[in-house]
Image (cartoon, rainbow, N blue to C red):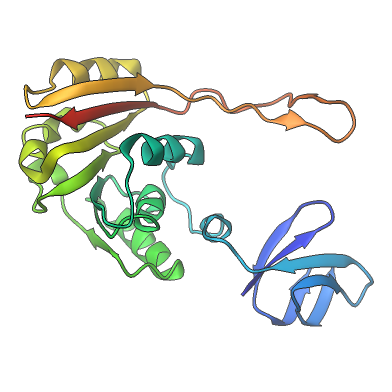
Length: 232
């Protein structure tokens, strides 16, 4: 499959043969510059992992790339890391973790989201990820983890299980939409944990074609990230 990019920036994910686009048809796609039957120019590249995630089936709101980037850099996960994720939703965050970690197990209690995430992992051809249709509020089976990520309404309910599953120095990262949830989580942190930081990232894009200025519209608040580390 190839990512096809038009001159105005539209992207398509297509097979290489008999491609039909709004810009016209292409019998056989080659890497680089292609011309449709109507004379329009389209560029073809091999898809990156990030390209492919844009074509995942969507469901509930996702943890955005800006926040995923902070999780990856703050926790230092790598090819040897073991991670558990809960509140999989579409599997977006879990997929990015699996693209880096040795193994990821993700929990999703809702049947409809379990199905969406499972299909997305197959689409991305991820072999090192396992999804469980299970409520993580009832416990975590995995041990010796480097990272636990929680995209849940009540993550403090997991605090009694997390210390037994995380290795010393491992991270618990919670994604929360409201500061009230952040406050309740922090008040329930156990002695084995140390609060590292609470962050909110806001991304502002810029227009750079004619007048150079910030874009008129932007996504404001998405969520808070609470980073906690096991120290005892």
